[in-house]
Amino acid sequence: MSRLVYVLNGPNLNLLGKRQPHIYGHETMADVERDVRALAVELGLEIKFLQSNREYEIIDWVHEARETAGGIVINPAAFTHTSVAILDALNTFDAPVIEVHISNVHKREEFRHHSFVSKRADGVIAGFGTQGYLLALRRVAKLIDDKTE
Ligand code: DQA
Image 1 (cartoon, rainbow, N blue to C red):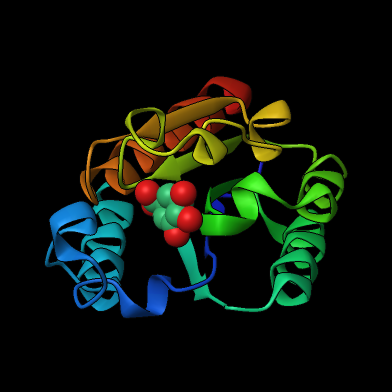
Image 2 (cartoon, protein in one colour):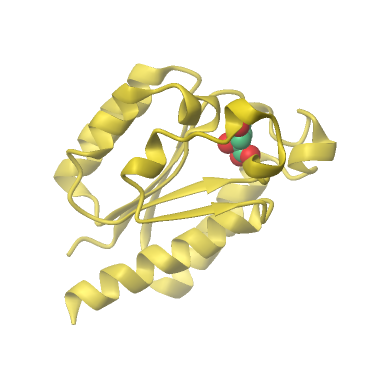
């Protein structure tokens, strides 16, 4: 089982740290990437860390992951609530998928309560701030280790 993990981030997350910090905090995507990479070293994982504001790019990365990756951590951002296409792409991926939301989407507007991606995700983390990415990575590592044993 491949130890490469794709960490995929959807629209507006490039503005993390500047965007509604009372909801998403002050850490930037670069901070998250740094922390994810540091943990990955500890867990013996290789990371592809990507962000896009374009739905098709996220779909293309999932297709790429199909060929190479042992897991996906994904914060689809607003596409969570709208994208059947990302769900369909994830349904072609045969290894662990963990969905992450920085904020607790269930405490927020009604339209954020539904997730298409959750129909495929093996686990969902919401409301743990950017620490959620690290928890998700630990879970993917565990699932990969369990399959490898
Ligand atoms: C988010 C929650 C989504 O509802 C929102 O559209 C985002 C970020 C989160 O990380 O809390 O852009 O996925």
